[in-house]
Image (tube, rainbow, N blue to C red):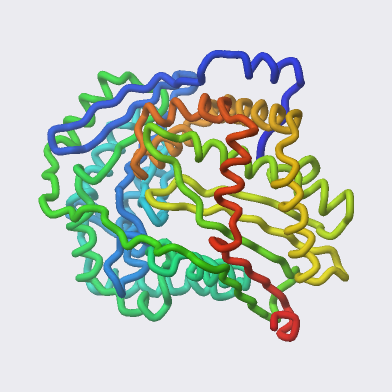
Length: 444
C-alpha cells in the first residue's frame, strides 16, 4: 500500500536526488556473492542468505522439495541439534525465519549488531553440514502436509489461485505450487532432500546480504572467516527451464465451493519481468497496475466500478515482475450483492476497453509517480525490507545497479510507455479468466 505525503513535500521528493543506499559488494573465491548495506541508525543487523533455487527448479515429480528442505534446514547439523539454531538466535534476543518462492529460498536472522559473528558461524555451518535422519524427515513431511491442509486445502481462494496458476503456465514450472502437489509431497524422502541440498546449497549458488549497523571491512573479514572455507558445488545445473508456448486463446475456469464467502472474478495475463539493464517495460507495468487498481478510491477500476456505477465492493490490479522468467499481470473484482460474476466481468472489461481507448489521465500519472517515489523513500527506513529488495533482485538475475536504478526507471515512465505496455499485455488471448463462486450452478 502506498503511503501519502503532503503535496509540497511530495513535490520536493520527486525533484530530489536518486535514492541510492550505501552499498558495497564483493565475491569470495568460492563464488559466494556478498552485498553489504550500511544503516547506522540502530545497533542491529539483518543477515540473509538467498539460494538461487526455488520451486520452479525442482526435479519433475518432486514438487514441494524446495519448501520441504527449507523446513529441514532447521533440524540440525553436525554441530547443532534439531531446533538449536533458532534457540540460539532467540537467546541472543534476535529472531529468524525462512521463506521459499518459485525462484529462490532465503534464510534470515535479525539480531544486535555485535552478534553478527555468531550468526555467520551458524548460517555457514548449515550451508554445507546439514544432518538428516529418517525420523526427522518423516516427522517434518507430516508438518508440510498439515501446512498444505491449513493454508491451501481448507481455503477455496487458495485452491482457486492454485488452479488458475496451473492454467496460466501450461509448460513452465511456475504453474506448480510452491508447497507442492499433495500426491508428490507424500512421496518426498530423505534421499530427495539430501540430493537437492547437496546440489544447490553451496556458496557459488548463494547471495549473502548483510544490512544494518555494520562496517563493510569487518563484514568482509567475518564472511571470509566463516564462509570462505566452504567448498563450492561442482555440479550445479544451468537454470534452463521449459518455457511457455504461444498462448493462442483465452483460458477460462469456474470453481464452486460451499465454503466461499464472497464470489469474485480474477484475470491474469502473462507479462514480462524485470530485465537486467532494461527495466523500462517492467516499470511501465508497475505504474499501469497502480493506475488501474492500486487505490481503493482513485484508481481507474475503483472509481468506475465502486463509485461511478457501483458494480463492485472491491477492484484491484497487480503486477508480479520480480521473476526469472515471465511473470503476470492481474485484475480482480468482487461484485456487490445482486450483481452476477458475468455482469461484473463485463463491467470490468468495459472499463479496460475505455482505458485503452482514452489513455492515461496526466494528473493521475503524476500522482502515482510521486507516490511511488515516496514509497521508495519510506522503504529505506526498513533495513529488513532493503535486504529483501536486494536479495530478491540478485536471486532473480538482476544486479545491485538495477536495484538502485529502479526508482529512476519508475520516474521516467511516460503515458505513452504505460499505454504501450497496456496494449501489449492486456490481450485476452494471453489471459486466464476465472470465476470463484459458492453456488455450483453459477459456475456452469
